[in-house]
Every structure is written in structure tokens, then in C-alpha cells.
Length: 358
Ligand code: NAD
Image (cartoon, rainbow, N blue to C red; front, top):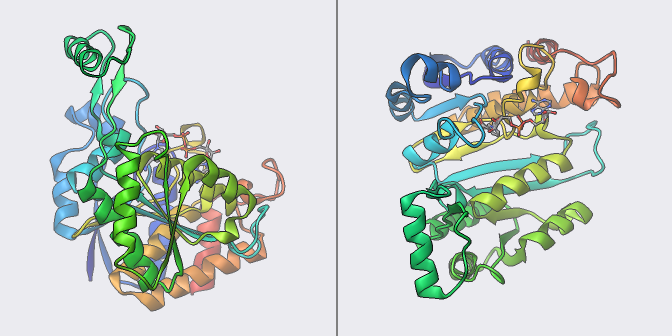
């Protein structure tokens, strides 16, 4: 039996979590779910959106399955997702983006693995608020030491990129490529403009690449990468990026395979793995039993593989693939138009998958 930490999340989280739990249970794999809440409602009750007991549970079980959690914009608590990644040192976010037959998308045969550094860059949380004493000191220091102008009414976010974190993520990308018989790793950056941060990322990536002569290596500037992916995604294979570009390109890649409702993911550390869909909590759809549960279900497939339950993972993925190919029990986002009256509900998708499994 496996002990798995289960965080349903908020917004659409609880409904896709129920669907995911049901289909995983239908595979017959014996799991004891250690269920925990996190987010806005917990913040109101306990004064923190991420109680220590949630982190303790993940550390103990080493594997978690998580629904999306809303982050208040501009003010309020810091992102639970970012805090989790930093507290547990989940340094890698892996998002495989593969087209399923029958999906309505502009592209066929997309098969990308997006590997995003998760701990630093502009997500490091080093922020200086407009008008604060520290911000004034920082601005004075920058003007004094660089002679660059920063307006006094500026807010500042710091972008640290280290050799340590870059070596770790790029090595992961190459190891992933080897293990999964992939041919090429592409590193993405804006080193022409941010020489000290992205320049260091690129230089470090090139050094790591020398240790993997069996895997092809190339780099792309992030704006060019966006255009290339939209025009010819089939040219790319494993893509490794710093945190912010990774966030953006992950959503772009999700768009290539039919939308966020189909894009699974995992945040990995040395010891711990937290599986979660690429999308957020889509609050406007909360409680409607309407959204696509497949991104979270496919995250569950990744989790089963991680646990070594290869046969169960294969069966569940096969059931998902056949439900998609039949095209009947799929949600509104996978129908020809979003108001298609034949769109299935979230729970109907789970029912259809379970029927294939049993
Ligand atoms: P979102 O991913 O929640 O939703 C954007 C749009 O994508 C939705 O309006 C919907 O049209 C579509 N969509 C998303 N998931 C879908 C699904 N399962 N099925 C069908 N359509 C789907 O992005 P957002 O609106 O920018 O973010 C909402 C909240 O989620 C924010 O607070 C954000 O911080 C948070 N967020 C959390 C995570 C996480 O928990 N890991 C990730 C991203 C965003």
C-alpha cells in the first residue's frame, strides 16, 4: 500500500480531485490518501494558507497529488505553490506535452518535455515595495554603483540565477533525455539582454551539455522560441528553462496539445514528488462540474509511473486516450465549440474512464 498526500486545492480543484481519485482507485492500486487542505479558506481559519502539517505529510510520504490553489494577486499571502516548491526544494517542474489522437488542435504529433527550474529567477520572492525604506536604500545603491537611473516611484523584483541551480536543472534535463530515449535538449534564455543572469544560465548549460555527448544540445532566445514552437513544434524535444520562461512556455506548449485541460505535471526534488496539473484554479468555473479533469488525471498517470505501477499507469493512460479518441465523453474545451450541448461534465469524464478500466 502507498501513502500519498492528497491536496484537493480550491476553485475547480476539489471537483477535478474527486474525479482523479476515483479513476486512480479504479486501477486497483492500493493507496491510502492522506488528505490535507491548503489555500484561502485555510488561511482564514489557521492564519496560514500552508500549515506545517501539510509539509510534514509530504515529507513523510514523499509523494503528493495536488489540485490547483488560488494565489491572491498583488496582496495577501504568498503563493502556496511557490512556497511549497521552495520549502521542499522541488527544484524541477516537468511538464510533458503530447498530443492525443482525437484532440481538436492545430498540431499533430507534438511531443515535448518542458523542464522548468523552480526555485529561483524572478520567482525567488525577493521583492522591494515602492516607497519602502529598503527600496530607497537599494535604489541609492544601484544609482551609486551603476550610474543607471531607477525612478524613485519604482517597485523592484530581483532575478537571481545561480550556477548551482542551473547545473542541477540542466543535468536533470539531460538525464531525463537519456532515460526516455530523447535526442535533443534545447536551453532557453535571454542572454543577449540579461548577461549576468540568463548569460550565466546559458554558459552553465553549455558546460553541462559537454558531459552528454550522446544527446544533441542547442539554445534559443526565448522570443524566438515562442515563434518556433508555434510554427514548427515538431523540431523540439526536451526544453529546459529558467523559472519565468518555463512558466510561460509551459502554457504555450499546453496550447499546442489542445489546452490547459490536458497538460499534466510534476514538481520534483531529490526526495519528494508533487504531481499537479499545469493549470490553475479557474475560479469562474468553481462548483459547476464542467471543467476538464484530464490534466490532473494524467498527472495521476505520471504519479503511478513514479511509484513503479507501470501496468496501472499504462491502463489508465490507455483508457484516457480511448475516451479522447471517441470524443463523446469529453468536456466543453475539447468540443468543436465551448457551448456544445453534448459536452460531458467533469464527473461524466471520470465515469467514462472508469468504464474502460473495469
Ligand atoms: P487558470 O489555469 O486557472 O485558468 C485559465 C483558463 O484556462 C480558465 O479560465 C479556463 O478557460 C482554462 N482552464 C484552466 N483549467 C481548465 C480545465 N481543467 N478545464 C478546462 N479549462 C481550463 O489560470 P488563471 O485564471 O490565470 O489562474 C487562476 C488562479 O490559479 C490564480 O490564482 C493563479 O495564481 C492560480 N494558479 C495556480 C496554479 C497551481 O496551483 N499550481 C497554477 C497556475 C495558476
